[in-house]
Image (cartoon, rainbow, N blue to C red):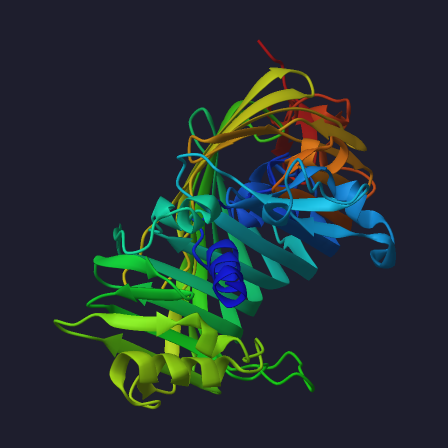
Length: 499
């Protein structure tokens, strides 16, 4: 039972996820977001009032799942010294045998919802942009990312539902796929801006060179029946699995970040304002994100297990002595022996690729009063064929109040029409701190995930201005009024009469 329980927990929580992507709404969407907004739209800085901006550091981390949770706890509870933390496993305790007082209890959701888990980490290093003139802006950025996703797992793998299932009672496993990867990016951003009849248009593109670090994926091609047998054993089939992984960090010692391949990707976006960028009524955006592929051509291995007209029987007692992750290869050899009769029969190659978590996004921002805005966001993952990281869907509404040196945002988001949550983000000068899931940090409850982010950057002390007319976000009038008030005659300027 120990091996099977561990296998199911790891496999479901980390691998078979339903791809809920967190977008850090309080960081990405303000008019002062600048380079931090490129993650959702490469033309996001169309309305930024700076001639240049330099990001020194940005970090965002998010995890969410509906498979397992910690009872009545919060993120701050884990901030204590690790040596003082005490954990308990809920299935080992009941009313007659309660968990030790003060322990953090790991339990499992027991409802009819489809299970998901998701995790991502993004770190942006030095990044900047500079406006070359009124129409052209160039930028450069570096970023490291880790992403995990999966789709298609049936609810029969829920912990209590599975372990309370009678022996020999089959359930149907549907096609699914999962993927996890870590990589680095070096990107070049270009923004073209132009006036329109009633506003302003910005078109941005970010081209990125990818350095592939680590990757793994698993894909089930067909539906098949699966049954639980006595003795920590599963029986099912016929099966058709494809899976691949890198091998560079399987050893217990000597683990380090290294390149195992490369790739290319791009983002494309546009931002349209009704009114001036500095004083618009509406700001509308559209973007395509993460269109590209990671290629793992070094220290990589691919596998295929396909059985026809027969069932496979897997006894998990045989895997008890294997220690993960350093013994992943022996585990896969044992699985190949159980299903194909040969420990090396599943190996098909030494390179593989993973599509990035592609998505399209629509943004709409409405000015309600001077400095007060309301933004709506929709992000939808694009399913790509083969081995791919899968992004989920997101709907968010973010009211915000922004000034040159201060900003407050309250993102309210809905994931896959299932989880409603509220966040809080604030910017004070060059520093932004926030979360899109405020309750997970401060309120003791079912802790099944959290979200935190910060950014630190520098920008010009003053925003752009035209003559004596300052940007209204810094207390002045609009650019349109400034241009209407002056025309250039010869080498100077004269004031024109305004009707």
